[in-house]
Length: 450
Image (cartoon, rainbow, N blue to C red):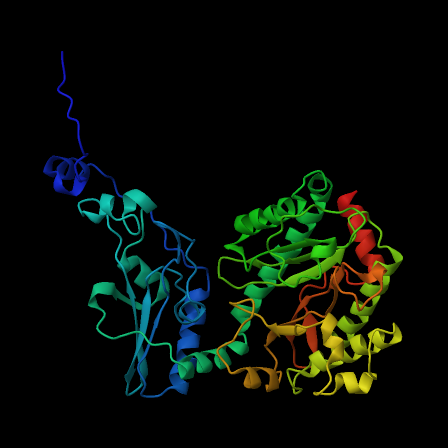
């Protein structure tokens, strides 16, 4: 039997009736569970009620966004807008939540792009929503039942989303104090991150055999984060030796130097999108050098001062000042300050900040730097209250090319960062399972690395 082969440009499948008929039928119903984290819908209902009380009579519309383009026709992985998730418990791409004012408050509706299933052209032609491309998807009725929220097709949306500064500022203020469900999510994120640190340290011997050992460890943690949660909460920082003073060393393309301090800044974002943010600086050899230990000890003292200053009723900036006073005093004792400690700590001084140019903490939650919708002055000058979550993260960063420090300090970078919950009487360190003193870090490294 001979066949006639047709050459030339392949046909556009959507224009071929026989293909459309062939692919439209013969499909069994596929199980497509709704990806909603337990408890998220109930928490979101409480969040909507809080926002409604703050904005009586105002229409609110927010979009979850779409995956940013990477290059050509490929995109980065999608991650929903944090405010939309906080208000709905839904992390779907292309979602829009609308709160329409009513005499009793607000009525919420979530608009979603419906999945393109068998029988629809999009089933095979739409790589963003077609189930042949992305797998079976839950229908809008399933979403509505899972979220206890009215859900309608996106095409029916008749209002424009808005994310003006006033709305984002209100949401940031509301999100600062976490409810019980959110606190549980943060605990889970921190626990997963602590486990990730152990996994990373166990891989240090292998990483030291690779010219890009930093990436080996970065990949170890990122795989761990993807396995236990949604992924890393931010670009993981693995910085060995002279890379450690670089605050955001995410390139991670260097070796793991056995005699140099290794800075690890890591956080798991769990499926509910809440993230941890923890940093430890460890010696790959199992022992800090005398200089490394001296720097680590000063950072530890600053860290403990910052931790002790976190309590309800004080300014958010209080722990920043407490840590900075210790840092400035230590640098002065080492002869590295050109002025007195008092002058350095004054608003017109700040000379010690050459070696600690960043802040020493931030709010934590759905975003690693949470609640940034507030103006900086309101953010920094706010008052701590029970239920707030934040990090404390002082450090010292002596760059390899910094000629203001003696040679033995050049290329040494140390940071300690813990995640805290403000309580009624003080604070709870959620990441306390990891040691912060040099002796404890050495014992941990020796046990984990071998």
